[in-house]
Length: 282
Image (cartoon, rainbow, N blue to C red; front, side, top):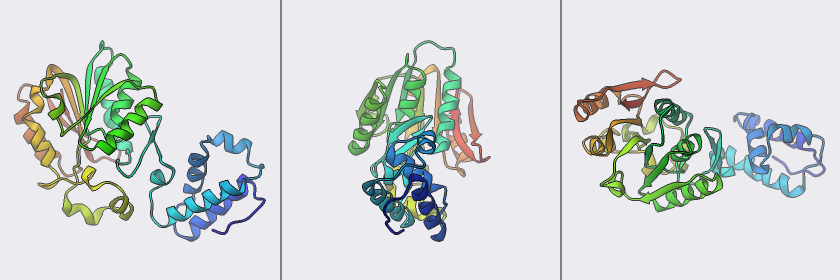
């Protein structure tokens, strides 16, 4: 994409879209790259379509477009991803939040509907997406988030501060930081991809996203197995558990968690794509 002077924002956007198309990338990304970098809404862009883009802005846009063509995910280029309507800072120390995880939050919020203040736990918080969405949607709840990675926790804390979400962040492995505590609602989106599935994955995911947040041993089941018989000690009698799972893991995890929670109802639910995606214990 060549640099050029005296272009309007509309012309810059058209140049970006054309360049992406020529490089077999979705031209729709051109708008997202421009808006997120400028911190604008679509309305802002429409109102300023005819205004001239500054040389500095165009250079940055040119650089962003080239990075995207080279395979870097948009979210890491602009440093932002939206989750449940909230803008979150993301870095290469954190996984990019996915729409499927929004469905997990939605299910949990429905379960807590009409209830008074609850104690909520997010295990392996990453960018803080789940914990922040839960706290923003239910400010009365006491939310705790754990993660093994100090780098990820630093990003999560920054996001919580930016969005004015009062969350307790604890560093440590899985449930280790909350050893003697019980919760009304526990959520987790642990690493669940098996090494065997590498061939099915997008190159940009493999090259840029943290592997520790993606992959797990034992066909991706390692962390679910580690938590299965510990979680019952942390979930209150009438509490609920929501875990994101891999599309091929439903059957095995259903069997395992029925053994771990013999007195509760354990179900596997599908995401909007019709794939097994959620393990729910109520």
